[in-house]
Amino acid sequence: GAVVSQHPSWVICKSGTSVKIECRSLDFQATTMFWYRQFPKQSLMLMATSNEGSKATYEQGVEKDKFLINHASLTLSTLTVTSAHPEDSSFYICSARGGGENQPQHFGDGTRLSIL
Amino acid sequence: GQNIDQPTEMTATEGAIVQINCTYQTSGFNGLFWYQQHAGEAPTFLSYNVLDGLEEKGRFSSFLSRSKGYSYLLLKELQMKDSASYLCAPLDSNYQLIWGAGTKLIIKP
Image (cartoon, rainbow over all chains, first blue to last red; front, side):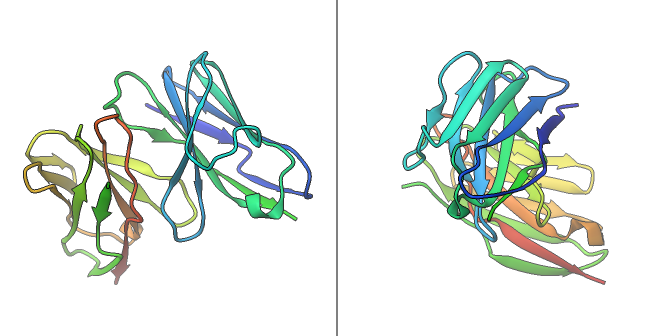
């Protein structure tokens, strides 16, 4: 149980392109979803937290107009990187949590984004 | 501030036992998670401790001492596939997970 699907797993695109990443909880209802970014050999960096049907809460330093998050249902959240540039190249990972706030986060497989 | 301290890297032999220690300082505490992360992959949930003591789950066990701000992950009968980073992540008073850089575990034959 507790499977989270994330796609695409790999994106290579030109600078200025917008990229959309989907995160789905397949066998449970995710009341909260999280979006992380991770650079090589560094710790996970939380970008934003979203609850179904409400606006995402962004961490300090994360531009909400650049990283658009939509959490339209209890099983789906999307992250759109708008007008991506090479410095946005990173490993983006979503996680989903069902039930109470002390429940574990279950992670998708991540999306490796490379902007040329 | 909030802080997590784990060894950066550890090496162990296949078939042996290894203990990965973690000390933490957080604003409030609502439990502690251990995750495994293979290189280039997303983290996988291993265990959750909220009360003091040892939680055993197959080859993996996790221990917590809230008064000492200390936890460890014990891995028995090590296998080559256990080579990964192990992340200690406490949950603070706002139920926010605090992530450190983790411990890279290298298993040698």
